[in-house]
Length: 504
Image (cartoon, rainbow, N blue to C red; front, side, top):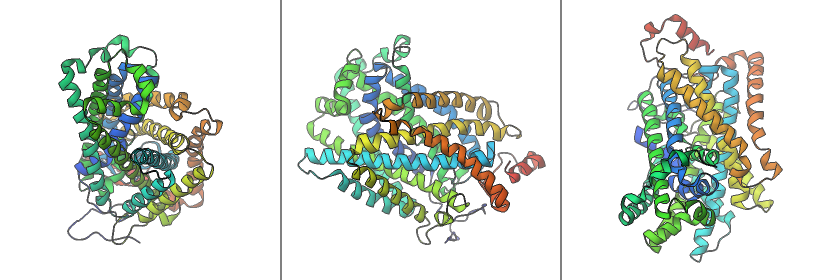
């Protein structure tokens, strides 16, 4: 059941209008993106592994490299988001650049990847909430923490997204603040020695383990592409979506690079690999004990749980948007594509994602598997692979979309996305090659999970071709969006507008 926007919030008519609330500004979208990347949980959970299994002190440089690669991705992504506005993200962009059949495949991969990542964060939140609570005398089973977290995430996802943004904003500011406080303490004690130049030396950057480090660097940026999912909910999507994407990638790259560099300086370049290997998830807590206080370490532990919850909520909302759009267009059951009459939210998509999380977590619990090694590593590994793969495909889609348009540009719509594709294709290859390292297991069932991505990518186009044959009118409506040319329509010429209307 759709809602009608009020007179105070006018909006232009859009194909397949779903009635989502248009309340998001650039800062709000930035909160959604950065919260999905989960700065504190990335530092505590991912960076020590990159130090231990990768090239040690070279981790900060790899974050900068990943940031530059993803900035090339963002240049093309921002260019297409200025002219194509839809809540479908990858699904819509792939359609405009490569055609509808690959788009349906991409949409199904996105549904699989974001739902898997959301379940993975459920496991991470429950695991660390139990550990932190137990260390302070409250020993509760992880299933209870998972249920409590899922209840709150489901309730927030059911309502208008502004409420989620407020929660995510508070979480992001708190987790960034505690890490900056730790960085300041290290700088005060060590001065310029806290930022050792060896982290950026050619010898370090070409050392053993650089591929593993690069993989961890890329997966730490998961969520930066989600700005486009909120295009239909933004005040001025042709401006706010590109700006939010640029700002988010820049902030994440600089912040991750700086904090990991501070950790190298605090421990010492020659010791960071061994110390991180022995302490792993305790590395930043031990640094907090040393450079701050035990009380602030406790605060950091609590904020880690808040960081994981925020990332979980952000990815829950992202998964909802894919379920909503694919339901609205008949690729998935149409009930998913309805909007709540009062909250103007994709409430049924949220309920479906919540139900999927309940069923998956229950299956893992009944099997007696550990929430972290069982749920988190496998589901986050699957989600990460799918999202990095889609980022690479999106780069090719940008080139395809602008290839014959008069507003194409040698850098924004050609070279930058080509460079982004090269880096992301390498990232996809690294994730596949080191999938057992990323998931922490050589279990054959977990090792086979990447084939689900292949299955979705192959079956999706076949399903689209069946829709074209059996329901041509429905096929014609797939993955359509507002097309907002950067140049006047008359300058674009009839060939371009016809091509847009045809949807390739």
